[in-house]
Image: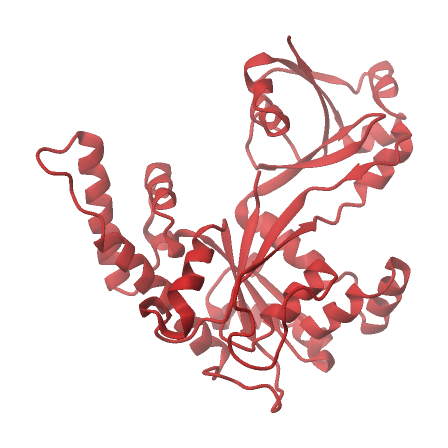
Length: 360
């Protein structure tokens, strides 16, 4: 599954600094002026998962392959972006390719950083959302009914288009008015920006991180979003962490009174918000984590490994992660009655270690 997230916000709110930390290298130009990021920077980031090393010790392999998240650093949007202001159209097109939008909101106070339109978190978010709504409205207005009669499916689509246009004109986002999977799928085919899931990163000062991390509920109330969507981060601290060894990172976080990095919390929030989970495969060649949607069946999970597995699926040998560790792998779980044989319609669970049996 391609999990891609676009990092957006007004200029100079810390998007590129955050992106640099995500990649653990300075690949984005984190400069103190608008439009430092002229082309979108794309980076693939591993999902932190301590289970992989534990499984590798059991099956005696050194190859660990984590699940991944693709982050796209998109240049700062400004008021009028939907009409081309500040190279807006160019950057909005890059957001269309992502699965979710991560809003970076300025929560820090630094007089040396040019604000470039930023006033306060709520109005900053409103500015970005209005531009995304206007861009969606432009997309919908370009949809023209076919000449002659319409099929029932086409009629339904154009009724949905009118519904979406009315919602946008009323200041709503598409995601707020979608009522079924059919409408959601149609919105996806049009790459509508306000139909995408949202995450919110509050970028705070270094000295505020512990205090602000305890104020998530206040941010949730201010932004009027769900708690699971909000992550408080200090992008500067994340950049510093990125240059340290794992041991030094743990020590640094402990000094700050934090249990884990903001980036780990951001990736976890992305999984929750998008309704995703991981299943694990463990063999002598490699241990790997695979991303699937919550509620996916065994045959759908097999298809993530290879599309041919869908047609050739026979069964899935499944053990829970804890049982796999306790009983020392596939042989142990089988001998102790912890191995389950599941069919194609089995609903995958977080922590499942799986061996798919595939026909020729």
